Length: 245
Image (tube, rainbow, N blue to C red; front, side, top):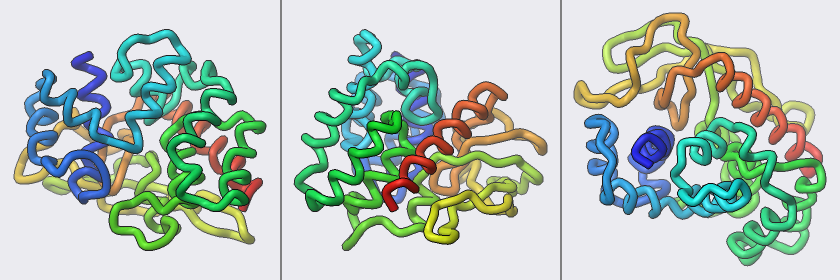
């Protein structure tokens, strides 16, 4: 449980710090991550992420894994792995219906769930591209999430080209709307946070590393395998959401 909770927190902290989801006590979450410490307090904080936690339970149930914060489950949601492929369309549909049907029109909900026929999986980037876009779930949103926020909210990847103090410069592809479809643009340098006040939770980052990012924060150095899986699940979500734009 400890490693799964800490992995979950790495990706959950950036939007939590901005007040978009989870507990109001983001300093406590950051403290757990920087100390590499996991206990009942971190579990309680993690369960308050009302967007992500139900997906973890769905994935865990489909894979007969008792703990929703098992590292395999957490990785499946943020990055992607074989656990996603065992989530069948029917329970996925029921989960979406219970949580989001009341937040959108019948037509919008129908379009969103139609991608289940195309093999949609409960990956975070599916949630961003489909659910956030239609339901406007960010706490300060007055309408559905916009393109820039979708781009920041999805888990993305890029190559580190410089490390400058508490930040890194990363070549990353942004989400663009082109000819009415969502695509990834050409990689461009962007700034990403590594540490706050000298504290961070990511292993040493070097020039040339491929990293994952969430809300302009570096969450992890990706292995070749995890990079392939994140790319594959992102492109799957893009193809599926483009069928219903």
